[in-house]
Length: 131
Image (cartoon, rainbow, N blue to C red; front, top):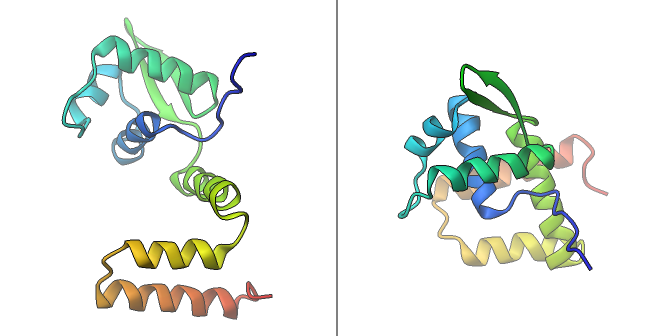
């Protein structure tokens, strides 16, 4: 049986999306120059990855001379929200408190980051997000 296509980006796809979110539309070569991994993949690997990503609806492409110009299909917030939602349902069975507790336990948060999290929780509650 064929494996179902994952709609959320894989780690390699997320790395490409980060480049596109930061730089805007790019060719494969431009993406390669911005990759931050220790071992940068081959041109053909990135090209294949982008073909899959376009099929998944993560990127769009348009001809630019003899190459293609790739751009994101969705804003960063929407894609990251989908990733978080997938993690929340699959790993934490929908328990946001369990997910946040795990995040806090695994992170080395600064005082400023903790204060920013507190403010975000307060703002969420003020908007009526708390049930």
